[in-house]
Image 1 (cartoon, rainbow, N blue to C red):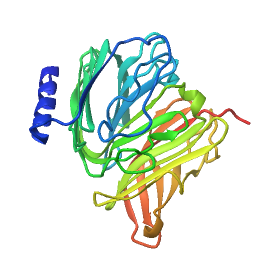
Image 2: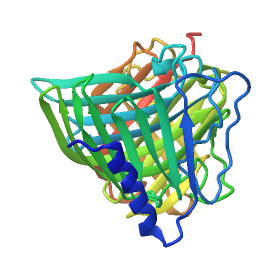
Image 3: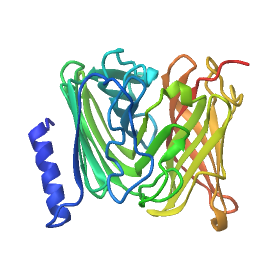
Length: 373
C-alpha cells in the first residue's frame, strides 16, 4: 500500500506525457511552515488552466487555502475526509493549527464497528509543494505522510496516506463522473471564483466513483462509493467573512448535485447550485438556490451553539429544465464541534419537480458562527 513521493512525482510526469507531446501549463508552488509578514494576494477570476492550482500567492496571518477530498459508502456507514491545509489558526481558526504553524493534513474516518466508529487526526507538515499541470494539481505535505496526485484533465485523483505517527496507511482514488465548475459557471476562463465575499472556491470533482482502502491501527476500512474534491481560499480571516453556511454534495439516480447557501456576518445571503445528469452539466448558478434546515433544530439562520438539524431541504432552479428539489436526511453525524460545526452523511431523495424521484447518498456540513440574537 505504500506509495513513495518518488513514485508520485513519476506519476505526474507520466500523466503530462500522456496528455500531449508538449505538456500543458505547469507551475510549482512551495509553502514554508510559517506565515510571512505583509499583505497577501489571491486569484478570484479563472484562466484557461490552473483550476486546482494554488490561488494565494503568500500566506500571511489572515489568509488560508485548502484542498478537500471525501468519499462516502453507498450505505453511508463508512466515510473518509482528507484535507490538506495551508492555514494558520489566525486565518482559519477551525483548522486547529498552532498559531505559528500553517501546514497540516487532516484525515477523518467513520466505519462500522459495534457502532459506527470514528477517527480524526491532524498531522503537521514541514513543507508543502503543489505541482499544477493543466487544470489538475498534486500536493506533497512533507513529513505528514499524506499526498495527493491529480491528472491534468481532472479525471482522476489518488490520495495516499502512510503516517505511522497516527497509525494510518492506505489510499483513496477518485474517478470523476461530472464536469468541474466554478460557483457561477462552467470550468472556463474568465469565470468568477468568488463563492461569497472574500472567499474563493473551485470544484474540480463534483462527483466521482471512489475506491477507499485504509488500515487504521489494525482495522481495515475498505469501500466503494461516491467521491468529491474541491478547493477553498481567502486572504481575510474566515470568521470575518462567514456567519453561517450549508454546503454539501450527493448523487441520486443519474444526477450529481452540489449546493451552497451562505450568510455573511451581517446576514447577506450568497448561494450556488450545481446539477449534472449522466456526466453533463444541466445547470450551475449562483442564484435561484435555496437550502434550509428541516426537522428538529431547524431554526434559520443557524446560530452558534445550536443543535444539529435532522436534514436539509434543497431547491435549485434549473431554468427550462425545471426545479431540482431534494431532501438530505442524516444517517450519521460524523463531526460535532460543539454547535459551531457539524458534518453528516445520509440519504438524498428527490429529483426534478414533476418527474421521477430517486434516492442516493450525500455528505454535507453546517458552519454556525452567528451569535444568538
